[in-house]
Image (cartoon, rainbow, N blue to C red; front, top):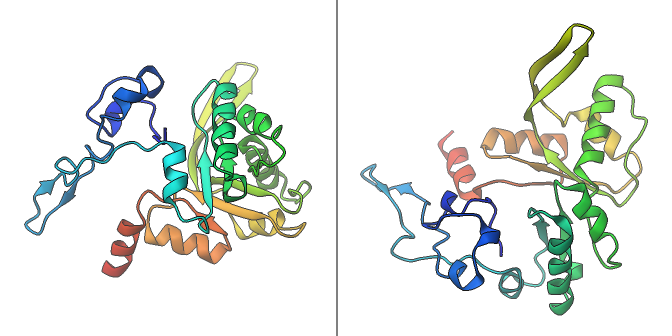
Length: 232
């Protein structure tokens, strides 16, 4: 099932975790239940409560999206092994390996998916983050990804830096701006490396990603971004 938050109540009228609910019960839920917008008078309305949207399966999505449109699939459920095998079966049955590139914040999911010969995967998030940290702290490009790699991480993100001292531990909150001109140049050292920036949810952030030479972005709402740009 293609549903991002673990808790069904985040978007639907249901309760509980996705993996605790049967398929038949999941098909009854409205994936658009919590989506709202303001009408012309400024009143908050819920347009999909009268026209429910069902949570699609991966196979249903593959059948709906035009075959010439590439798909990036974020594998989120844990444990990783049954998820990877289920996704692989669907991609096999739909003959869709060439259309889909697979990402996960769980490095185990990426490693397990690599066992499938046809799988197109991002490098692990851990590897991408470590490259960026080394570049930020060392200032030299010692470990760029190999040609043909796809990498993905947030454009910038709040992180905690933890330092261990003899007398205790220090924690600092840092707004990590991962992608800089130097970082993009480093990552593309070996040729054709695709960079995807996550969390790009404003017109300004999109413009910054474009100026940096980011290849693609993930956003919650392209429509909201376009409207924001028009209002500027």
